Image 1: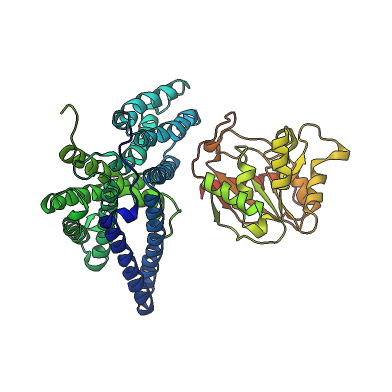
Image 2 (image 1 turned 180 degrees about the horizontal axis):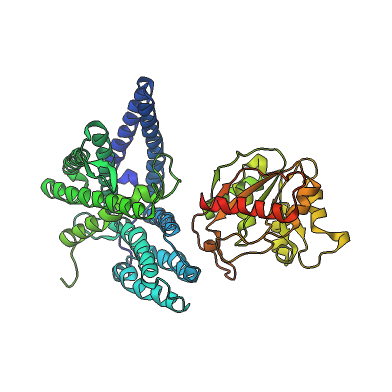
Length: 326
Length: 200
């Protein structure tokens, strides 16, 4: 049932090249961060650089964790994304107003539906993977809540839980699901494609942040996310699209296709960030959590992955795999 | 060694964060009093204290729950060194307040839930008089209100399966018993201090 062998790093020179590239970038960022810390003097600049350095330190940890588990193989990666989904889910659900009657439904969400979603990737059962949360959970959650007899704000309570599950589990799980795609002529290299995807999304975030800090003038949506500017957006998206095209050798895509896919990934990643900010605004908080220093919570870091992963997954699946029955 | 490790596990599992609003963590003798909505309250408040403070802090726990079976008794006594008090049969020679004063000794702090039992929601219920008797016997003690948030969602009264939501402990400004302050006034004042933390 599982045709994809675990992909080990040393076997794939392309993956090694990507990893080395990322490590070089991190070393560079650390050096720049250190130089900046020595140069700045004004209070606002010191705070910005301190935040920047905290982010860079957090990046080292995140890259180390991601690489270790990618090395362990498919199951290591699945466990990592499963834990990320779980942490993001709890940050999300902790924000939404719940009633005591929702307790059992929440238990189903955390301990049955979330593990089941990742198990479906483990056994490469595409049908379950794609239908579990949008169909089964959509029926199970309201059924469990209606059984308690508490009908106050019924639709908004069920919708909140469903949304939490869709964004934090269903959408995020599309990233490791890249590992179960069977792409002709690309056998055993899916770990590289996942790495390519994560790299694009995170680079897009970082570059938008950097361009925004350097040139940012006009806010895209001052009411939702005052830090996101048009200059940052275009700088980040164009750079990432260029990098995505330049790294096409790590993917089954042609350079032109890689550019288009990178563009779509960045664009949806950006919309993901904006949407998650809007949700935070709605609840009157700035960050979802406190787990990663400088980054807020897990969900603050995953917001762009949530929207970009399904897009990247389905474009790749539709155009680059043989879909039975199509 | 096991206490920092367990505390770390509890913090990871409950995602609890401490907000020191009215005071900072300190080694002086204190009575932490908190709202009570869940069996996890004791564990969470104990775990969120810094290690050095935690080692000198003993929770006051109900014998009818924490002494009910061998596992709970073991957790209560060997892990967080709890003082088990009887809230059902209170008599003069075995009074809970006596045990609390004894537990305080000259170096310890204690954790107390003055509502006496778990409440179903985030509101703070009226206090039982134990905290007043305790404050009268040890008037020099700092009484620190601690508002525990969201624990009633994690493990509400009547449920046995916890869900892993995030929670928060907010530490307020220390209170002292004023000279000549009556029981009703003092219980009101302490309860209000805790209730105000809920709104910050």
